Image 1 (tube, rainbow, N blue to C red):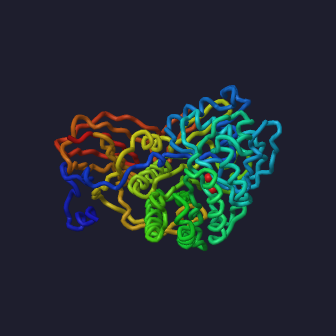
Image 2 (image 1 turned 45 degrees about the vertical axis):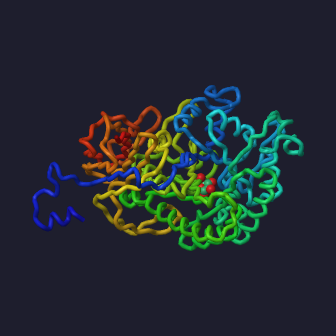
Image 3 (image 1 turned 90 degrees about the vertical axis):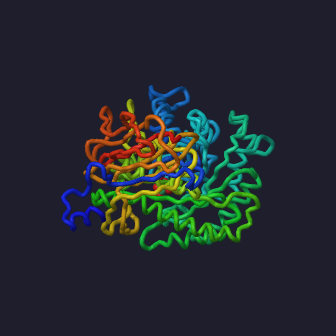
Length: 524
Ligand code: AHR
């Protein structure tokens, strides 16, 4: 590393006032791909207080006449959520959608076996669709391929997407919803590679069941796009590549996306290890991209797009992970801090850098359950991870750019990527984690400075002309990496800083320690 070399040569100062510590070069002709708006999706599962006590609370004075918490709706709208996956998660693998439609007092309460609750079924397909419309998001449904049948999956598509005629379309109309929902995105089960999944199958059996479900679902509603359950199990004894290879080989003509899941964490309290985990996500993305490319050579897809990757569950989740915190009505209530927000910014950077293959991503989950929004009976607060997600969802659109980044790096120890995950060891982790997009005449540059103690002075160099006018600066930061938010106290949030000016095609900017910065510039 340069700084070590300088020290060995006995030079007094590694960097003078004008020699910058890092360089980011931007060339508008070096593009990666279109950024799909579905990268900024989320996830609502019947789990803990995500639905009941989160988005839906009929007894709350904060709710409207339908039972939707208005303060939650406002906070959700602030995230510009493009897609919401529903209703699970592990929950879906024993969910029978017919339990959740029709008159509320006739809906059967069920034992919820994934997270040990009583499921009243007071919230179901039609309530979710009203919520989705209220916040202006695209629904993305998951069918039960655990204990559910392919026939049940077909009937749900009929209920949602067929205008009139057959029994389930007419049933929807009878329930008070005359127009079909035309739900475009459907996933074929959830985490079917996981031994914990109710109705878990091996890869061959899952592929067979998924193909037949897909056939019936597409015969019912030919336009729908289907998502296969790819790898979620990265335990040392699992073989995620083998799972993905089999699913892709068997379903390459049928599905539109392969779903991947990843949860990371910092159980051993090692900041630098933890901050490198988005690189693991990126490495997994690259491996799956290769597997997809191989299968696409022999696929018979007509004029359809190739299969894309949907990271349809990602987040940090490691605190609420024992028997007590993983069950009941207060399950998975994780409280996030600044380092978690920086990891989320890293994930989003990785999605943008891989925008040609990653076309959908869903933070898990939306409210209370490992979520950016956290409620009490009469209040809510925005968790640290809300802010990077918001900056990306609002501003990072258009075309992703392939950047040149030169900065110091570090190496990690061998460490567990998250609880129940494999061990990794990362060499050459760049202190600056960067992505960029061009949208119209605006260039958006996203920079995580992973350094815990040091600002990094950087030349941001445009190779496509001079910067024009002032450059807007937004920063997510806090007093230290453990800083967090709670009711009535916000330590981590987005701050708009003073706009900065460039000299010609060079902007010199000092990215503060442990921060996420978004620059919004124009290039002549
Ligand atoms: O998001 C929490 C859980 O994590 C989901 O239910 C499951 O799919 C994953 O294991």
